[in-house]
Length: 183
Image 1 (cartoon, rainbow, N blue to C red):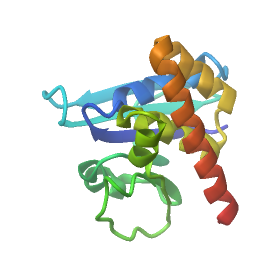
Image 2: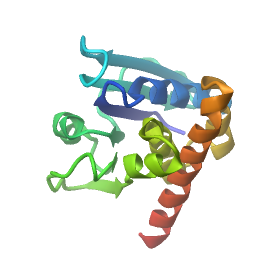
Image 3: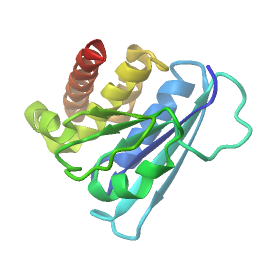
């Protein structure tokens, strides 16, 4: 698999950094690929802009930072506004339409609308919206096996939160699979 650059962006409190850590862990520990993960966030603990970036490849990674993302997982209006124009030609944006009501038409970019916050609330708490998005990513890209992602999620949460995050992941995965069949 060639280099794949993923940017996950939203605001503090949405589990943006945790999503990047899980994605990187799934690639490196459970899929035997190479990966790097970096993060950036404002001084605010919650509510400020933040992003996590992951580079995945089956080859050695010579530069650890995302330059031109293949994928943007956008979980807030500000994240969409800041990063949607950075996507590589023929890249993909996975976005939460409830959190991003205003969008522009981008040529040569595929969009998937995953109502992650709504799905997360039905799974038990909106804090698992990041796991919904990871499920959608896994289904759309098939870079990392579903089981590898589930192992990484299980390794990152205590037992009481693990069940809800796995449920959210599976719901995001299943919705994205349905969307893929329609296109």
